[in-house]
Image (cartoon, rainbow, N blue to C red; front, top):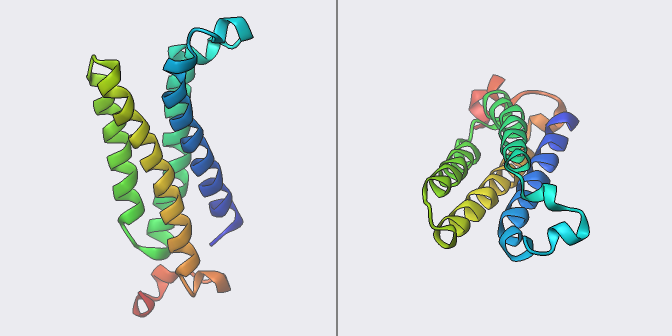
Length: 139
């Protein structure tokens, strides 16, 4: 597993985890954010930037790891499910219903990075600088 891939999984995990915290705490802190000068955290632009960042980082980390290394679909399935939950949560108008769905989706994306990181760690040939997908007998 390359250092770049490890770092992308760490960044992706952290970004997705902070996204979940942001989504969970924003309704509780919305009243005091302007007092702290942090009202920008409640803007749709910040939310959209978080989603775009999570999608880009996950795409750059999960898909190459799948195709070049471990060939385990778990991380990608969790990633797709997480984004589907976030999308579904935004379609629901009730904030008390949509918020937990969005938070679970963001945590799912973080989990996808965690799973991907560990699948790459378990791949024996990747530690030697060789690619597992080039050695189908090791899967």
